[in-house]
Length: 56
Image 1: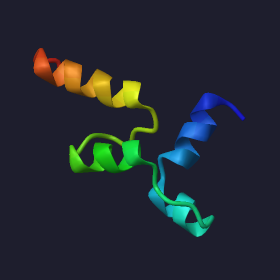
Image 2 (image 1 turned 90 degrees about the vertical axis):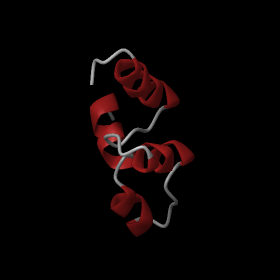
Image 3 (image 1 turned 45 degrees about the vertical axis):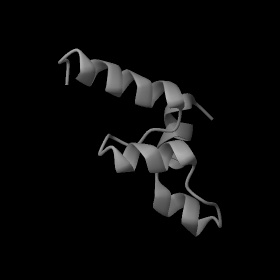
């Protein structure tokens, strides 16, 4: 499975719940921050860093 496909599945809370899994803490954090769905902490950091310097 490629990264893009894995990310698409792991970043979709409904797919996870349908499979009997819970959303990851990082996914919940990205939702709370109103960011696009994130699976990895480095994705959240990237969005936050960009926002801090005015990139987003």
